[in-house]
Length: 213
Image (tube, rainbow, N blue to C red; front, top):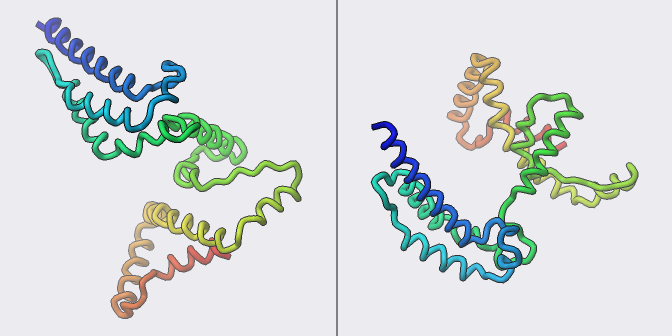
């Protein structure tokens, strides 16, 4: 009895895998398996083929759970993100995935862990997209490159990073000293009730000032 049940489940997984291979062939992914074919197809052709595949592919067999979940997920994601996934077919040199970029961020996180001694690299996961890499042969050359960034642009980006960091800092304070943190929030709430024009708590203004100076 158990063997027959496992066999039908395995057949369902096999058919779901076949559907996944059809999707991969339609997207010409990975490029190495298709040679230069991915360079010869346009986003319009891929969109038509994917739409046809989604419309015509139906789950089959006694057990269809894996096939149905795959098809439903494919349909919903294609409707939501389909057009945004096809730029790589029209822009020369644009990769079909971000695996190389993720690998670069992974190497940066490991490098930061080595030079800082910190076990956690969570900050890089949050702010990694805002990092800038400089290539220079001397300190003077590095300084000249950094000075090319306009001061107003630097302050704007720095303030955005400070604002993004505030929520994590708040939960850190709440974890280490919940009584003081809650008392401070109650105090700020009372102040804001008395002065509705005060849109930002003093702690937020202080945090911004630290990152702006």
